[in-house]
Amino acid sequence: MSAKETFRSTTKVASSAHISNGKILKKAASGTLKPGQLKPISDAVTQLDPNGWNKPGLNVSAADAFGYKLEFHRGKDQAFNVQWYDNTADQLPDDLKKLSDVLLKRMSGSCDGTP
Image (cartoon, rainbow, N blue to C red; front, side, top):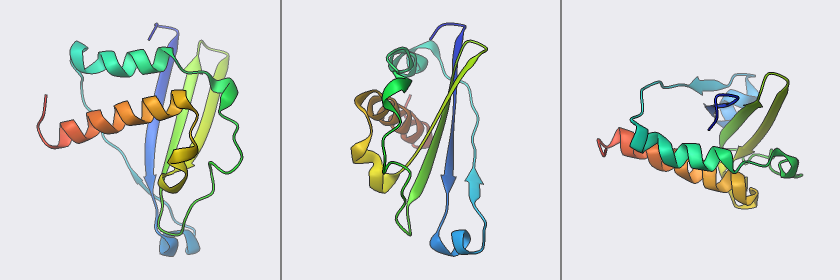
């Protein structure tokens, strides 16, 4: 990932009850990654191709779905957004699928104490 390319990923968790009440629960986490932990993420980010992200149906959630939103910046003037749910993850373009898999693996490794 070059200095001109950054990304921010947020995970939103919502149930049908929260959605019907107009509420969305946001979960956020922060931390520091070592170079070896960051490399797979950086590699996946360098392969991102936002031109293929506008797929119909990605942002259609099931009643009990987990939602994901990715905001990707390339330089100062280009920002790309995409949203999907766990029930539509099988429809992700290959580049987003790879990034999603790498991030989920890193997050689960961080939660269980794996380096």
